[in-house]
Image (cartoon, rainbow, N blue to C red; front, side, top):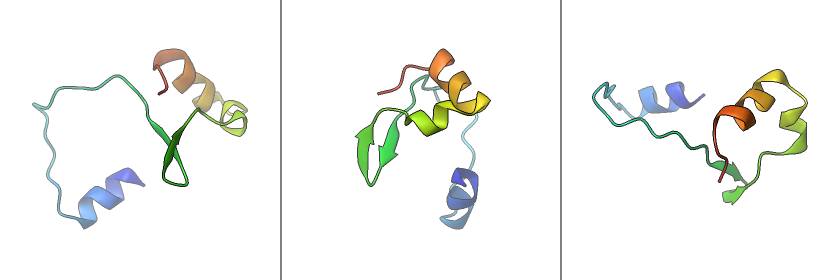
Length: 54
């Protein structure tokens, strides 16, 4: 979904950009923790294990 949104606004890839290793969860426009429902999926558990969630 993010890639599609970036294409729609005409954003160009930036391979030289500094990688950020944090994950910001937004729920209804506010920062939140990763919801328990996300943790029921392997991908959600992976995100929690490899990236600090803020």
